Amino acid sequence: MNLTMSLPVHTPVLLDEVIAGLQTRPGGCFVDCTVGTGGHAAAILERIRPSGRLLGIDADPEAIQASQEQLSEYREAVTLVNDNFVNLDDICKRYQFHPVDGILFDLGVSSLQLDTAERGFSFTLDAHLDMRFDARQGLTASDIVNNFSEQELARVIEKYGEERHSRRIARHIVQNRPVATTLELARLVEQALRSKRAKIHPATRTFMALRIAANGELQNLEPALEQASDLLRPGGRLVVISYHSLEDRIAKQFMRRAASSCLCPPGIVMCRCGHVPTLKLISRKVIKPASLEIESNPRSRSAKLRIAERLN
Image (cartoon, rainbow, N blue to C red; front, side):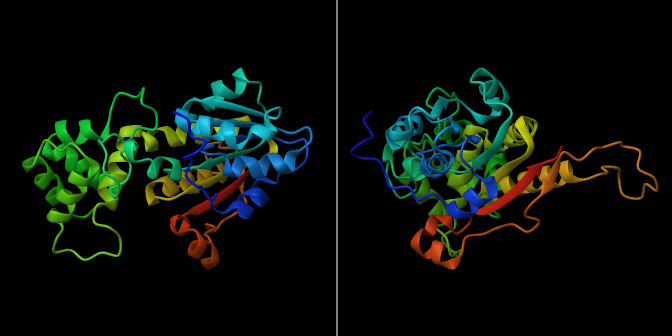
């Protein structure tokens, strides 16, 4: 598939904050674990010239193709890998990117995926229910919607979408199976919630839950963060942008645990765990987009950024 003529415009979220958080500098070595169409990566590469290097990883092969186009002028400095960031340690060692000066995770779904109808991510574009970042993965959103039991489907929608009406939605979906397309599913969710008022589209949480479940996003995040921490050189920075409260909770808890000098249960008088902190929190409070950025790029409105630094 040639993406050159049809590449959706993707505006990198919190770009200035990411660059400052990573402390990019000429000659630095950085990893973008979710390179997407290369927005953040291009800004990093521009600042690490002339001798810096960047490793870009993405589970989506179309994102890798798109970033190759976007980053063509930096081809001598960038290595792009189609893989899941849960394999971060192996990837970095395979391509000799260790230790590194900074690692970025920009989680969630990109404009490339949302705006390409046939990928099945959007409830506003009609397509087959898919939602996989990589078509080589086994589980699709269609499999979940059409094959899971009502109880299993409700659990997925509640757990990953934080949807209060998950059982009502699951019941209505199961009663109307099979569901073939994104617009069919969106319509069923709207019917199930017709009496509920909300600021966002009624299907938003259900679609997000199905995407997270199909791609194993939450299961992969903490192991990847642990690997990222180990790959950083002393003073290296870990930067995470999340768009979902569950992702943000994983990132926050991981960073706070790694920065803590004691992990003993509450009430223990003397520390016995022997935990040695490996990270220092740079942003104790979450960083969010300014109102001007949200106005120019509405998809940034739910973004949350956290920064930590590797200790000696």
